[in-house]
Structure formats: C-alpha cells, structure tokens
Length: 289
Image 1 (cartoon, rainbow, N blue to C red):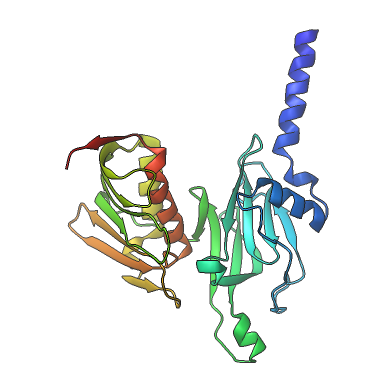
Image 2: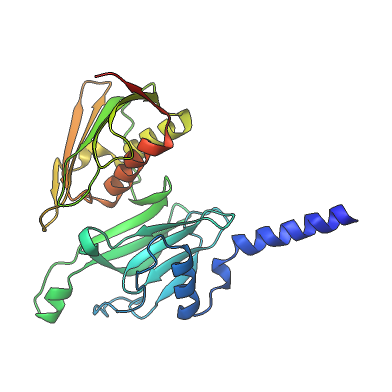
C-alpha cells in the first residue's frame, strides 16, 4: 500500500512539472514563470509593446502550443521580445529568442502560425521601430520558422544530401569577452579544439564528438542546405564578433560562410550555438603545442 501511494505521488509530481506551462492563465502568470526559469532575472518581458499592429497576433501577449510535437505544451512570448520557451520535461525549459543580436537589435513580430508537415511553424516579420516612428516605408522580410534539432530554423522541405567530410569553425574577438576559439571536426567525430581567449579553458585539446551529437550536428547542416546560403552575412552595428564556418563535402566541394554578428540566418544561429556548446558538452584532452 505504501509503495502504491509513493508511486501515485511520484506520478502527480511529474505531471505537475510537465504541465507547468499549461497552468499559465494571465500575463502576470507568464511573467512569474519566465523570471523563475530565465537565466537573466533582470529581463522585463512585458515592459514594452512593439508598435506594429498589422498582424493578427499584435495584441496577443502569449500563446501556449506544442511546437515540436513531443506532447508537451510550449510557450510563445509576444511582449517586449519575441521568443519561445520549450518544455523539456522534468521542470527543464529552453529559451529561444527570435529577437536577437546585440541588445536584441534585430527584432521581429509574430505574423502567423501555420502547419507544415504536421508541425506548427511560426511566420515572423522583421520589425523596424525607427521606420515606424519616422513613417518610413521599408520592405518587410518574412521567415517561416520550425523547431528542429532543439532550436529554431527556417523551414526547408529540401535538405542537402551531400556527405560531409569535415568542418572547421573559428571565432574572432569582439568589444567584450566573446569566446575566441578554433574547432575542427572530421566525419568520424575526431575533433580538435584550440581555445584562445574567454573560454572555460585555454590551450589545445583533442577529443571525439559523441555519436548522438555528431549525427544531430551533421543532420542540422544538411537540413540548412549550406551550399545554397550566402557566403557572407553582416549585421548593421559595430563591435560584434565574426565567425567563419567551413564545411568540406566528400564530393570535393567546400562551402565557406563568414558571419559578422553570428545571426546570418536563424538556422545558422542554431548551428553556431551547437558548435559553441561542444566546448563543454564533450570530453577534451589537452595536448602539447
């Protein structure tokens, strides 16, 4: 009997954690939830509203929807910033900002929610607050975003099928403490990591990317179809960081992307985040110079 009660209590506890987003009813509820789970407790999620009232969601502060079809309710926040919060189960939540860049200077508004391939997708429109106040006409840019590989990427029905031989990823300094490092990964997962500045460690390291992470990394690269992306991206502000991504395919073709600001596309941003995370998620052995 005692074991049965314990099992029931455990099940109730799990359900409460898994459905925390389901319980949110008001903006105040959402604000408390966001501040509880956010790494940055100082963010004001509903302090300001964007001036664009042209979309049907312009007055909707938040929505609850399963964005990745995992049976857990996720959260779309449409306040000061546009972002999503994915429920990872067991009280774990992942924040993904759609507004991005230095001081979130690259902004968007939620234009629509559609279904593509049985999965919800977010249609977002670029937002230029200065143009609205100055009554300037600017051409809006629309992106259709889908949750894949634990992040937001542009929906792409035709991924690349070319086999990857190896890749390299390097970053430069910025006006601040941006991590400066070089990363080299072969198709078998063997990797080198050269940590220069502002990393958890400094030096040269070798390791092997675990198979699950390697499969996800290469799958994301194929989904983004890098070979069809531009070679250069650049944000319109200064003092930011540049990264250089080189992917060599087994057919001999090499794709190189230079990205000042690291937000050339939503998919590239997700890829960069995955590459940055390898510095701490993988096991590295220091080697001599």
